[in-house]
Structures are given as structure tokens and as C-alpha cells.
Length: 491
Ligand code: BG6
Figure 1 (cartoon, rainbow, N blue to C red):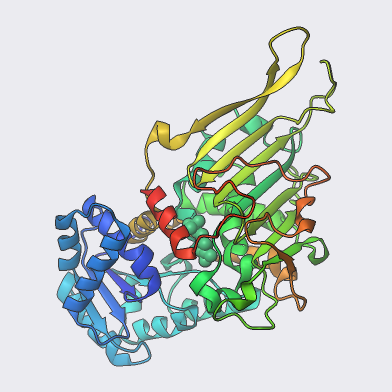
Figure 2 (figure 1 turned 90 degrees about the vertical axis):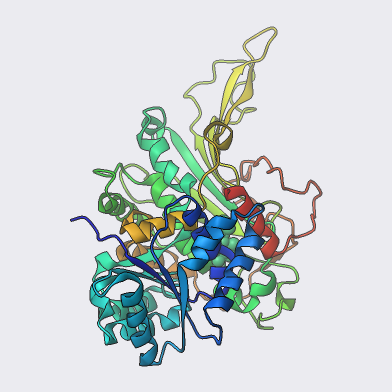
């Protein structure tokens, strides 16, 4: 069945931070490319009017974009209007229904995007149902989806009162990142990698998501969340699923999501005793952070996938704030050849590696051994490297794809409930520990105990990005600077 195209986009939380930094700039770019042609209705608890909202949209766009296309901005402003009021007031939804009818007709199909705290998801769904809007709309909800398995199921029950699964789109903006989706293309459009992609040739994986900025002004949000809930349960487990899953039956959304579900179902629950949790020095002084906080800003863990393909292949993962660089890398370390034929044996050499850099600039580097010029068969490492942007050009920012897909009704890049449940199951043993995490200095790679997680040789060194500061303890960037860099790079 083909999903219904949205006739109008309703943005709950249009005056909020996410809308300001990510959503409004994304809508502007979509309008600029002619990919957003439907009216936009913003909903928010505010005393603004349409003109004030439109001025705010211009500010958001100018803050995010260097050379603003004034005509695209005017088109976006001209197609946007505001419905102001409290989501607990049924009158807001009556006004919203009237606005939808006025903008797009009485039978319009709406896409309701909830950029509001999850505690309001149920209230908004009830409000929409109260005026009958739930029968002709889909609901798009931001992360986090729950705080654990039980709360995720409770939240789902609130939404499922009014919406079937195929009309609930759960945002995980990593699923909107082209380099993440490219994992599927790299693996399944080629025959080069896939024959290697199993326990027969892969020794281990190392996944690093590093950010060189601290939590800055997000203290109260972050302290209630921590690294595991912020990026591991959602973004990184989705990435891991793309990296390790079997080929989907087809490129269709549910075939892809079935394959991801099967992979996640095979991932063992984490062993709390084998996980390294860290907290950068100074975190407790962040406004909004509790003085007795036990929240982690860094985590390193080893995942085990108990299926036929991956049994015995560890997947080491580390993620954190206030690290030396901002990047997302996956390294596949291959098994050594069965015998050491050449001078020096294998002992002195590292095995072949395939490194996929997902951000900030996506690319692939394969480290091979070739003969050192001169006497004897002495192998030496050479990198084969491609920067995808140099070859293919820039990618679209995740939120542009998320809105395009939400309007078109394509669920492929949204998280299905069964994968969210599996992800909560996997991380559940390491949620909310009572003891404080180990300290680490800002600008380091986390607590010492994390260094040796993959084995005595530690993690495969990652080449620094262009933005990385060379000194051992670089000045930390703020979260806003970090986000600005990411936004700029996505363009
Ligand atoms: C968000 C987290 O979901 O993802 C942030 O809340 C994190 O803490 C961000 O910095 C990373 O996303 P991106 O797209 O900037 O890599």
C-alpha cells in the first residue's frame, strides 16, 4: 500500500530549540530545492503572532546559513502560520483543525511533527484525537522514546490508542544521515566487502563516536540522560544494526527494518561489570547538573552478537563528550593470514583494517600491506583512501531527509517499535548505576580503563579530523560550536 502524501506539515514546538537549530533551517533548504511545497502550521505555547514567528524563522535561517536565498526564505515564511496555545487546552486543537482546513482543505492529510518533550506526546495525541484529526494524519515523534523498556512501552501505549504503527514515525536523526544509510549500499551493492563480513575474516569491530565539546548549556537535559541513553541506545545501536545485519529481502522499509530487528535480537544484554563509564572533569559544575550526579559523559562497552555470522566477534564501542575530536568511525580489524611468509613475521605488523568514517566527512580507508621497496619481502602498511565528498559532493543534512520522508510517508529512516524495544533490552543492565563514573580529563580518550577494552594494544588509532586540535589537552568547544560545525559540514 502506498502511504499517503502529507498535505500540510504541523510543527509542535516551533518556537523551541530543536526547531531553531535544526528544523527551521532544514525546512528552508527543502523549500529552496522545491521539495517542500505544502503549508506549515506551527503550534506552540507563546504570545507570538504570525509575523513574530516569521521574523524568528528568518533569524534561525540566517544563523544557520551563510548566503541566504531570500526568495526561498520568503516562500517558507509565506507558507507558515501559527496556532498558539497550551497543548492541554482542547480549544488549541479546534483552532488547529480550522487552520488545517483553511490551508489545505477539509480532507487534508496532516503530518504532525512533535518537537516537544516526550511527556507531552500522549497529550498531543489525545488532543488530535479529540477533534478527529488522528484519522487523517501521521505522528512524527522525536527521541528519546522512553527511558527504559517499560517507559517506552507505556509511551507506545499512549500513542497506539489513536495511531497504528504504520502512522507513527519515531525520529532517530542518525537514520537520516546519508553515510549511515550508505553502510547498506557499501555492503550490499558491492561484492568486495560482504564476503569478508563474517567471523571467518573479521577479528573485531571498533566503533567510536567522539565529540570534542562538553554538555555546555544542556546540563539539565543531559544529566537526566547520560551517554547511554543519549547516543548509544538509539543512534549507535541503529548504526551497529546496519553494520552487521544480514541483507534485507529488498530495499523496502519493512524488509530493512526486519533485518535490523533480527540483528538486534541477537545482541546480548550488556554486562554491567565489563562496561567502562566515565565523566569528564568539571562536569559537576555544569549548570543544571545535580551535585551528587552519577551520570556518565563517556561509555565504552563490548557487544556480542549471538548469531551464526558473528559468534565470537566482539564489537567494541566507545562514545563520549569532551574527547579529543568529533567523529564517528567504524574500524573492522581483519584476521591475520594463517602463516607468516615474509620477513619479520606477523608479530610486528598490524592486520589489515577497513575504516569507515561516517562523520564529519564520510569516507573509507583500507589499510593494506605492500612490499617495502628494497631488498627482501618486507611488508609495509599503505592506506587506500577515498573521501566521499570529494568524489560525490556534499550530502543533505539529516533533518532535510527526515521531513521529506515524513511528508512522503516513507518509514525506512525511522525507528520501528520492535527495534527500540530490543535496544532498551540490550542497554538495560547499564542504566542508572548508583556509583559515580570514573573521571577523565577533557580532551583525553576517556578513563584509563577504557584504553585497553579491545585488548592489550588498545584501540586502533584514528586519524584526526581537520578540526581536531593537535595539543594533548585541547580547549573544549561548546556544544553550540560543535553543532554549528556539524551543520556546516552537512551542507
Ligand atoms: C543528539 C544528542 O541526539 O545527537 C547529542 O542528544 C549529540 O548529545 C548529537 O551531540 C549528535 O548528533 P550529530 O548529528 O551532531 O552527530
